[in-house]
Length: 358
Length: 207
Image (cartoon, rainbow over all chains, first blue to last red; front, side, top):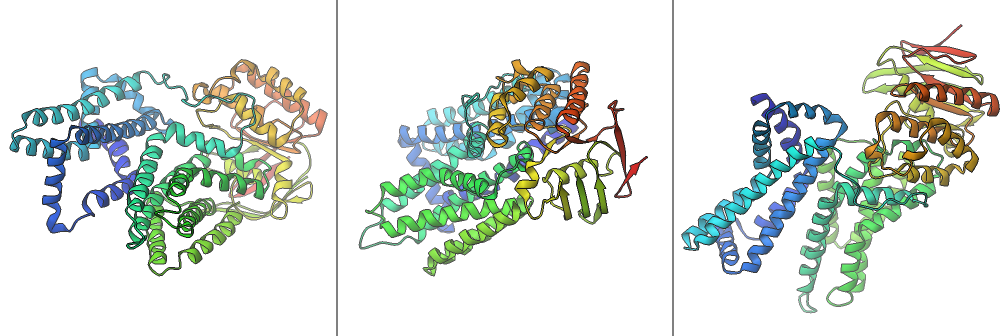
């Protein structure tokens, strides 16, 4: 039992926190980076009071937790059905109750950020004499943990239930970018939705507060660059797909320009929600030149990251470090007002890297 | 037909292949070697998938100077092919057709020979390893490549599938003059088969 738990921890829990390091960094910055360290307790206390007083706010939090649980479930599904983890089918030899216990422990570790915060909410609710929330919130989280664990066991017993959510395009012309887009929509949809929601909502929220008298894009760009960091993870997953399940594409006689166009289009498509959000906010509250700068810098960075991954394979750790450095450089570009120059440089080097990688 | 010039490949500090010069005339070649000898690596290098030092020329076309022209003449199928689970066989076929422009008759012939027609409408996630293998072979045999590199082409195939593949290889050689480079741990029964062995990072042609 101990060995089984250790193996599941290593394969699922550690991989999850490792893969989602960027997501948790963004979450941490959003939750704890907004106020000074001395004000953290008071800030979160008032946030929780807001949840307890407004059922709509609490419902939104519950929805966010559900989204996180769905993202976790999608990840575990990918692990359980991955060809390299076929041996996990051996777990079916365990008694159902034992298997459920194993997955329950795994799910509890995966949902640690949720139940950790939920316990604090329940404690405050109890202290504020609102026993309904003190009971309902932990119950809801327990439900998420319990149902998730049961779902993993079911999935292991029924490996054939999943059909692609996107309709097949039998016999019709299928451009290369559409394979990558479908991959993200089918196998990375929660990650994609999470990043897009964060990116567009943060852009909208931060730019909406800009006025003619108080026009400062440094903070909005900082948050935007965090969202671009998330996009870097999406591109990493796409490259991982290309080096495994689309390896055959490299052997096909596809001219450099044609392949580049496919990737250039894909990067543009990936950034489309942000482009629309920025377009909506242009020319007021964001000026047209600044809006174009946001789009151009985001696009050139995405293209650069993809080209880099094409030219050289690197482990996720190194890639994430590089992404952080890159976004640090971009932010310096914003502070020093030479972002356009930097973005142009990224675009040029992206072309060189792409040619080299091809 | 195929010329390898100073081909070198290392994984980290471990040299896997070091071939100063090798020239192969058209034909069917059986590449042998123990596990880890570098057979898969060599086939992937020849297919233009893995980077390497040196140069390869196919019918005089250098992979360094004209990568697309080179790739137009070579086809490849992996030992354990993988496809995104959400794609159907028909979609994959359509994708390849758009790049290679094979004759419709050829597609029908391959589908019929390998017995995969009914599976084309299904998604890769539902295919058995044998069916995935057949799809990969179908895609590798599309068009008129001068050289087809097949990594362990007979594993996971059922008996009729293996016979059909052997027949297709012989037919392609006879009809189109296509050359084949096959790696296999199983015995291969094909006419005019020439054997090559990878020994200590080097390829020896066995007489």
